Image (spheres, rainbow, N blue to C red):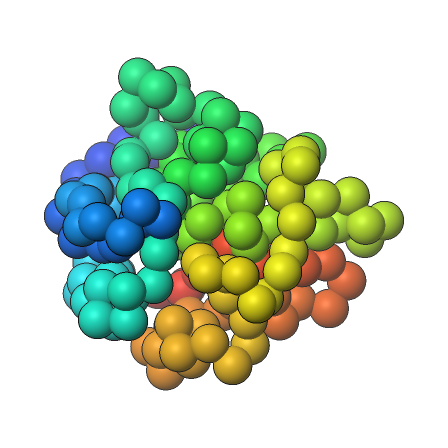
Length: 166
């Protein structure tokens, strides 16, 4: 498709500082559409100020993940751009356009219509550090910046997922 030609030029690598679950400061990178880079900087600044633990933030293109979404979410990796289609469809996902981010996928899993939890072994417990919920300041900041949260979806829940159409 024609969209594949200009996608790399639209992405930006945003260096981010965050506290991991070891309570130490780490440096990571989020690859996101250039028009959303400012929003990501704001979100990570808030997360840093709050000492909100983020397991890791490594681009999915890294040799550890090899563009494999399952590897990334299973490792509880926070990532954004991943050139892929929507699971089970031929349509490019918002991740494939750099317009969404998944935060701490093991702490904030995807829960399908029949209750299937992804990644396998994940458990959603809003009382645990690194977990997002409707009243969480990070969820509220994403909302203020015009992003949609998968935790608000009706038939499924994708607590890790935020997207913004531009």
